Image 1: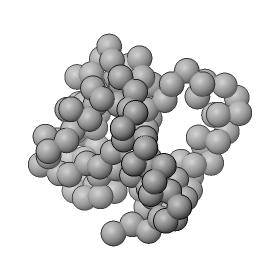
Image 2: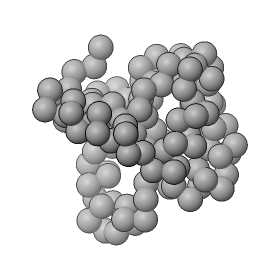
Image 3: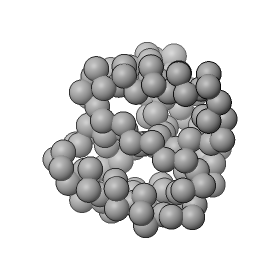
Image 4: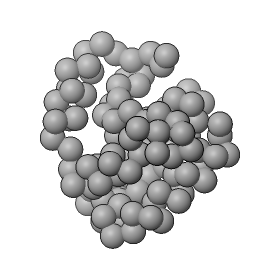
Length: 119
């Protein structure tokens, strides 16, 4: 089990009840072991972060980014976050919300391929 800051438990629960449209679409396609028969969790506290989706079997984090992530400040934060997660042995895949909504099958194929290579 991955460690996390206990203070993140309640915010993660809150995020699960207010998922974006893109998060809902992806969640319905990865839940209940639909990808390579592995479990995914949504809005999962890990270390000092809350990640959008987490697959412990593949040590994979999937992040969905809204338009605010295109701003310079957010990009630097995302890079630092990805580096910290990589330091824990996790691979991070990032997709923007628009891509998830318009190219769902392409996103799922990338996730599937990554999981296949890591389990």
